[in-house]
Image (tube, rainbow, N blue to C red):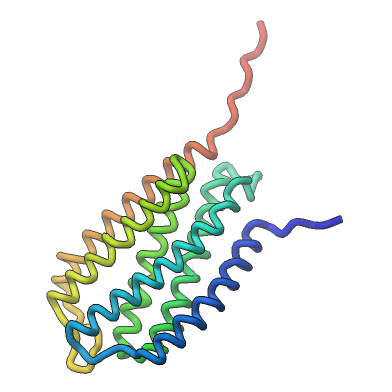
Length: 217
């Protein structure tokens, strides 16, 4: 008798397989074509790199979304939400590991590697949450469009920040608290609100208890 793997185990297996393939391919490309010196070229390189990371993460998100077709935790009141949150964590972890491996291969300044990691983490979880919620409420096509839109919007805020502040002379992350609060944090907050709202709305639809038949008089 064949025992079917738990959906989370299946999702982790898919994530590991994609991670090995993606990290190996992108790390080789980044090693052969490392990040340029500080300036506009570094900004373009950095944002293309981030976009590729997040598109790879969105691809994994779409692949594991099928695991939400059946509830994982029937003992929980919010079974679908718990399952979706688990997959959001899988997607976010995938983005983090991919960012670490490829940022090192690209030979970014250490502070810029940290910024790339933070950006990948921040955008990965909102895009995954929005994808799962949109797929449940509407369709996979809508989920893809919503995921792509929120990725581009969040990257746009980082581009605006870096274009305003620039880099350190060595190509590092130049931190400006006021500009972060003015440009990046509002965009992140709006993205988080949208994603959480859609995910919770999908959970309400998926986790609503079955109506009990009225007692016969």
